[in-house]
Image (cartoon, rainbow, N blue to C red; front, side, top):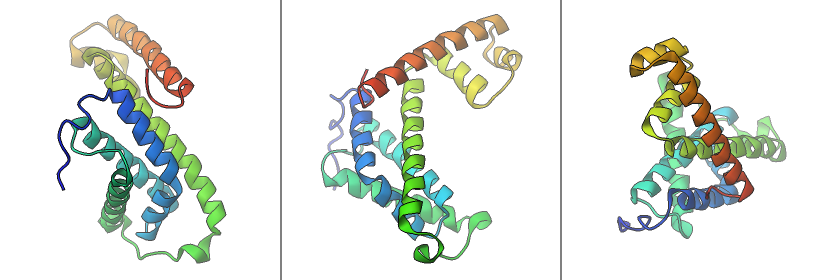
Length: 191
């Protein structure tokens, strides 16, 4: 069933992130269990949930999905299940399904998964904050911090001086800190 493309056009990106966070917080244990039931390790399950959150965020920001009601939960479960299946099917991680009950007690596995999913949620918030930076700052943050290239290489790639890279990085860090602090302070992602 197609979702009207303007569902989120009136929503600010931060409001979309708030709604995604609400959905994920209420479903984090179930999402990790869905991924684990597809035969991936606990660590891979967390990666699958994070990838599912990122995919749903992108769909919501494009207006291709809604985060309201049970539709968001069902869509997120489907995305996480598919990501887990794809991850398990890759040649280098292919392995048979594991018996979840035999290896660990559910409470212990759940605690680790909840903490890991909370960290993944924070990563999604940071990614949204990076997307709010201007193009040159976003490029500097991506190359310098995320891909860990030396400042001189970043300067050469962007056609600017190494000093200007440092200035842009300093300003970007300040903006990211403010964005994340505001997101944490409001209990969501709105700024």
